[in-house]
Amino acid sequence: MQNRRQQPVANTTNRYTPAPYAGTGTEVIDNLDANIPTARLLAVAAWHSKRHGERHKTIAARLREAANDNTKGAA
Figure (spheres, one colour):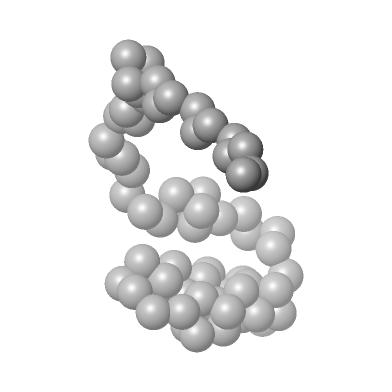
C-alpha cells in the first residue's frame, strides 16, 4: 500500500483581497515622452493592434497619434 502525501489545509483566515482597479487602463501611454523614436511608437502600436480588446485598440491609436505628432514636429 502506498502512502499518499497529505494535502495542506487551506488557510481561510488570512485571505488577501486586492483593492478594486481604479485606473484608466491607459496609464502606459498617458505620459508619453516626445523623445521616443517614431519607428518605436509605430512598432509598439502594431503589436497592440494585433491584440483583441478595447484597451489595446485605444493604446494603439494613442501611439499612432503620438508618432504622427513626432513626424510633424520634425518637419
